[in-house]
Structures are given as structure tokens and as C-alpha cells.
Length: 93
Image (cartoon, rainbow, N blue to C red; front, side, top):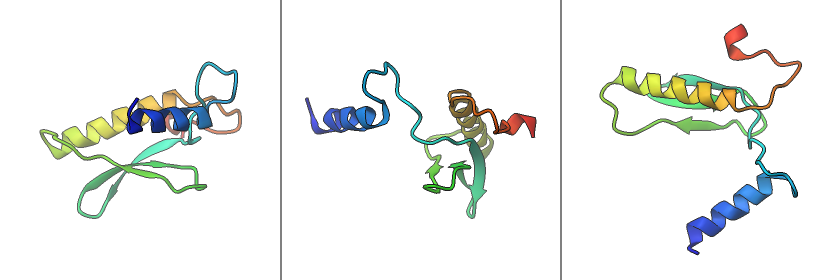
């Protein structure tokens, strides 16, 4: 086992309660796509506990491709969050 796999095991076990077969999301979201100065595309959580922002960077054919990728990631992340009875989904606002 190398360092990266042992760190992943520790992080996953910290998120998943004992005896539960699946991990809870580390952030309650919902996730939104924002553009920072310099056209830096980020995924940001609407949860203010940690003020999380994930920068989207990589080999994209165009700026529009990067935005499409970020929107697809946000949709996937939001679809995998547990339902909160008193929270509106971003699509319903």
C-alpha cells in the first residue's frame, strides 16, 4: 500500500459512519458554477461552513467546453446529495 491509498482510506473512513456501506457527502452543497476574475471557472458549495471552491482546470477545447464540464459536474454532485426537506434544489429556484 502506498501513501496515497492509505490517505484515501483514512479520509473515506472519516466520512462514512461505522457499519455504513456508503460514504456520506463531505459537503452538503448544493454546488454552483461561478466564474472568478480572469475567466477562472470554479465549483462552489453554497454551504458556508468551509467556503469550498474547486477550480476547474485542464485540457478543454474552449472556454465553453470548460463551462459545460463544470455544469455537468455540478449537476452530478447535486444529484448525489441526500435530499434535504427544507432546501430547494437549484433547478427549482
